[in-house]
Image (cartoon, rainbow, N blue to C red; front, top):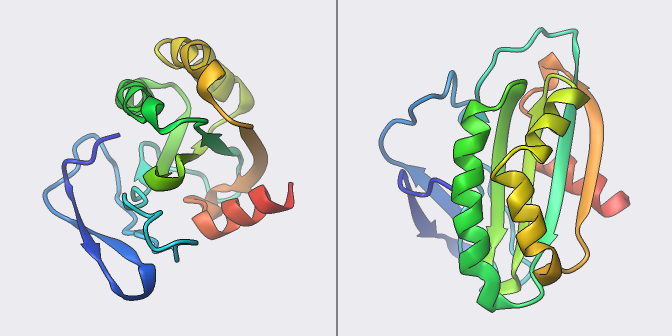
Length: 174
């Protein structure tokens, strides 16, 4: 997770909003989607939701694969290891064939992590999941995770980037 260009500003009523500082390299467009989420507990949002990072342009009428993953850790002592893998996987994402874009969300106090990504097709997503370091991270962290969930759906290019509100609604309904 590349947190260097973000500054966290604690707002009222439990909102956390990131203030962007500096340019993001390797990104075609930053759609400016900086979403705020009301925290279930004021102390649970310690990191901002990462803005959507786009890597490919989409065709408005074409169908694409979307994925939201929920990764709860069983213990807080494994957060540093997960964050280390997340940094490595973020570097992998930048090189992945078929990635349209992604966003990350973390609530450190509750040890909950989410990813939201869009892909050209299932094969591209599958290749990413099996490749290193993602494959190694799944093996290394599986015994430290709570009940993970992965929800897939399709969207059109005109719906990219997907919203966190829609992704979390699908997650809650699954």
